[in-house]
Length: 208
Image 1 (spheres, rainbow, N blue to C red):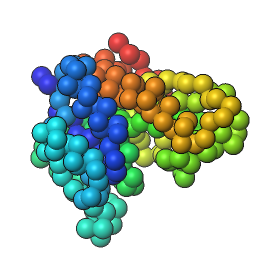
Image 2: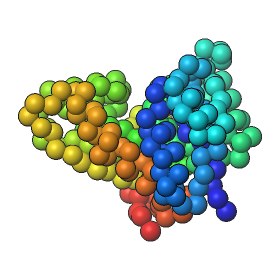
Image 3: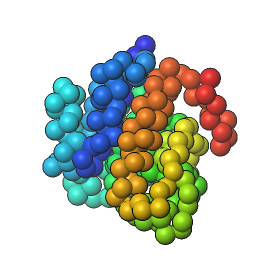
Image 4: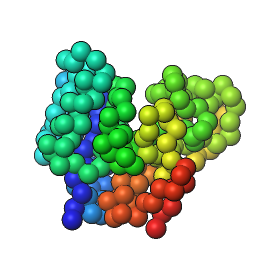
């Protein structure tokens, strides 16, 4: 049975595009993106979804009295849409535990560093790459992990590294990590999940 995938977005949706492109190439085996849910009505990611013929929905935090109320509405929406896998692709809204209880080991996130380096509170977007460069690391990269209530701390599914070059700026490093790491391992992890090839054992994810 094909798994229905919902991609949660807040902005430009470059990782969403990587997933759409992978799907068009037949690389997401056993799954289909059937919904894109944005936390902002003006997110360019919604236009990407529209162009690909994928239904888009908006769930803005401001429309709900609390983060919890928004999360409950999100879970309800995902259930209505019969979603089996949730992918966070630059979703900038904090969600509460209800999502992870409803979708235990079925929410994937991509983070632009090699977790546990440069992750957790305040580490998002360019900040991650600024920190990596300030620290002087020789390698950085991206991590796909299952999402839990603790920020960036869920079991790691896939990681890919690239070299940090001497004249890198945060923007240049960000671009290299997106193109060479994020856009490759996110579709790969989604496809493995949809084929039931990911087994979570404590902190370890085995690829079957």
